[in-house]
Image (cartoon, rainbow, N blue to C red; front, side):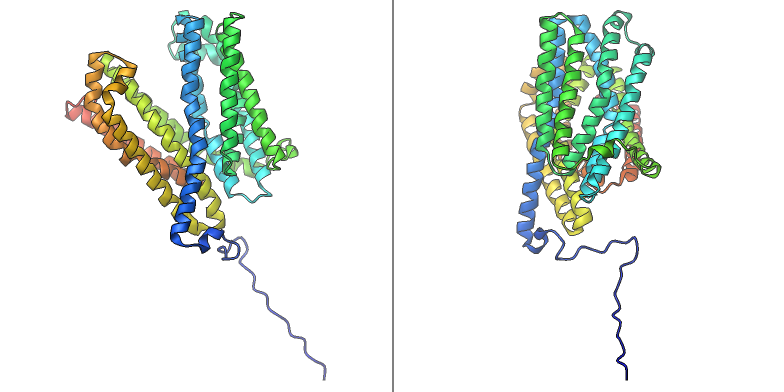
Length: 437
């Protein structure tokens, strides 16, 4: 008789569903002891947070140096005009930070073969949005300044600076996307170095053009344009050399379905950033109604909060990159990353709050010697310091949800938080006499 051939049945996974990573394909950390895993994750968080902190600290430092150059080399009018123009561009860049945060999550979660296409989509979006901003500033800056009720005496200094500075908008948004991609690849050092070189070049060129060629605010605008171009070149060169970006992907527009998904996620992050800016702007306006001393105290409190924000944001960026990486490859490490990041944030916030509480008087004296401002901040600072360790987990949760790409939930949560903040603010002001506190 003829031998019957036996057929082996092959099990196939359901289409479109990824199986859980096996021990053979998961991270080597998962096979180590719990203490070893936590120690390794802690080390990774700190190594990623350090360069991110350096990058974040350069932004307020750059604003201070630019203001000093404008005030010392171009006069009071130029300094006031720079304040108005810088506020406009800072608002624009804050609203489009989704190009950084979204790219970080998408690149970290993508397979190595898809990283280039993900980054090319972000760069394409950055160039389109940046070009629209540059074009809008060329034709709409006069209307924008009048809408902001800018003093007529400042317009001759503001308008030329805005027109020239706007040309750097596409470069700065591409820089955001490239930084996000490198952070998604857990390369925090290259963005930090690019920011350092950009900071040095911007202020050096600005100083030379203002001091030796008497170009006024034009000098600062040219310096910013040159620095943005240098930063883009350094970041894109790194991405191309490491094969994370293929230049022909940039020349190809993304498919319409991909672009729609990108815009949908970006709109959620845009709404979140917009709500935050609206809330803090409204609080600043409300502080101004209590008088000059309270308004000045609020400015100092906001600068202090920015110091905490820069530090804790660095830990959030580290958590975002690690969670986006492990969520698609080894979800069992996600809980460890969140735990380590929360612990680090609590310790950092508590130490910084304790130092601020012990040296409140000296810290306030760095900004002003006005007794009324000292009194206002003296009643606020104990509450402010006690609040920081409580608020620290919010930054880490921000990084966790960014790493998980749950942008819609973040926008809804921020809407609820802002509505609660507005309601609490007006209720407390109406029912009590706590004023600034």
